[in-house]
Image (cartoon, rainbow, N blue to C red):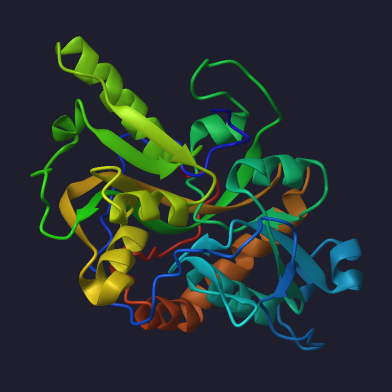
Length: 318
């Protein structure tokens, strides 16, 4: 697991828990099909009177588009509906677009390749429920501790932790991470969840217990399907996503969330370290929508107000 290939690498001693979520709609177990770059506009049209347009780099202002890398299979944060990216991130992007006078164009891709795509110029930013961590900021491989890239900068805009999702009725009696020892756990590859599961696996072995059998997949819906089929006992997931799946999948009859949130920390909009002007423009736009109330309306729409922030910090993750 590299710093350029993790969805939400482990974040220690964070603050704020995201509250329960009750969002209507069906769980899309097939996600968004393939993981190629299919453009999905999530923004308003360019506006001559956008108050913060002058803060953008000249080339982006001229193009009128910010290309956003995202793994669009993670409801309610981002997912496909009617051929369009919808969810918390696209709605935030819409509001940012009004401030900056550009379109945020979502491009679908595998999560573990998003930072690579950003650094190669395929995207200008990443919005994909990505945790802001020091490893990502510094381009450090979380497993080896070695530097593997230039890292990225983050504009923090939300707070979430990891939850344990199990089959409805919790047939295996899973309550904590310790209960996963000797069990099969399915989850998305390269995520904070995978990092937490690996750390717990090491603890299981140290405590003389059986190891966790980890089944990792390109997308979270694949992991959820394994859990639904009973091929695993749990899926570790960001709390908003776990709660959404518990509420919606099978009409609320497929899954439930157990235990407390683990390692709550900030989501960040990632940009290249070379794009400080774009980073600062996005930060200014985030603070503007926090101040004018648009941000609060988005969180209320998706029932995630307890994950809200009062200020868009840069590189606030640990």
